[in-house]
Image 1 (cartoon, each protein chain N blue to C red):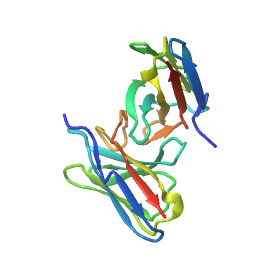
Image 2: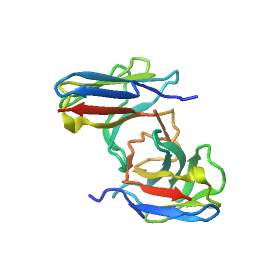
Image 3: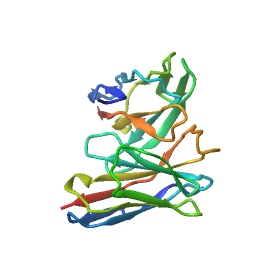
Image 4: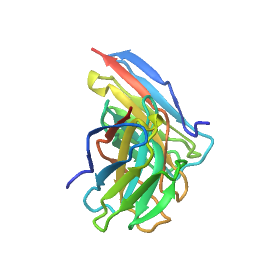
Length: 117
Length: 111
């Protein structure tokens, strides 16, 4: 069984740039959730994708966007980067039967450390 | 306002001691999960509790879900240096797809 993988591991960008982070879900999972974890904080929910559609969103601006592909892998895109976007970005995969029902045993990848200068 | 409050925030103990970490909320969760996270890595799922009053054991770790499904505790018996890490609790609200995380408890176990 292949676990959740994320790329790249580390990334350094400057303010105003755009970034794309990638996630491959665990085998057998159909749902991907993205979280932002600032230093010393717990992860904060960004959004979730189920069957290639956004299935819930946290309190993040529209410049945070995402995609899910037919193989259930996912991308997180952030436009117009700000200094406060510096964080560990975590992807979690899970299996859901329907879009509205979430047992939600989520398994996390190792994360992408984004630094915005 | 933090929906899930974890305490203590930091804990430094000697090998062999016992400890309890608490996770409290005014909200009712459909399920609650405990994770352990090493620096620079993703959280690793330890346990999921679903039923009010449920108790689960994982070797020296005991997890309890409150009767009202608003709080949870993690008890570690005879802590070892390998238990060092950040312990996070995370709750699922109703049918929502996301997890609400606490800020975590940073545990250091000294040999």
